Length: 352
Image (cartoon, rainbow, N blue to C red):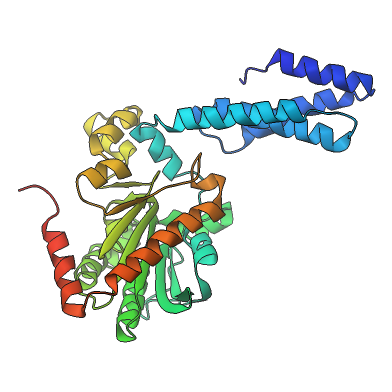
């Protein structure tokens, strides 16, 4: 239950009583309850309470221009910003994992819309089917033709089912490889966006060669003759992420994760209980700062205050700056140098 600020409601009630609009007091409670029903994570609840109060005040002043609550709104906005900064400066790995899965977080198609132009989706693996958990196609980045590929989760229930919750089957990875080889043929740089809990583990997927499809992608991506820039935008789950994650540069958004297994999966194996997920998350080292420290990724792209889901446009702007810069740097290398750098990068992974 949310703790309500009695002085706050007393102030509003007095103001509304002067204008004989007592019904609006009840509306404030409803606004707060609605706010709590939105997608705020457990550690964000104090922020949700303040944001609900701000929304309630704005609704009241919008309906009754005689009320002057600007000072109170400004005070609460400042308090909300400070509280958000405080909470997000001390997030643990498990909290970051929750942010990486936030349902309002921008997905691949959102970034394509904001960063690229003239996107033309290409479908199918030319062997079995079109897997909607992987999207890709031709586009332009600041006028330059490129190939864009990424995992795609759904927003509504129908879309989530159609896209299999972002878990690709073999045909999805074969589609991705087909598009990469097409890009290589026409000398187009490749951008991949990683956001999956993992490859689909169903019987049908295994029968159609899930492991083979992932392994083939790893091999072929390592020898592509064009620049490949990979970015983890949400969850980077195991081989399902790696299958489009072999590149010249690997970025992670500030609150994304990259791991061989989910914290819940790890906890279930080691402790026979998903309740130990927070402990597993810390032990796995799934966060961007930890992976940068281990030199497994190259860059961390900063997210807007409160996470990428708070401001899709700002997040896309931050990412575009990074992608444009990295592509310009990779353009300086010839094909042989690109391939050699990528090979050395892979050989340097892990400990001897």
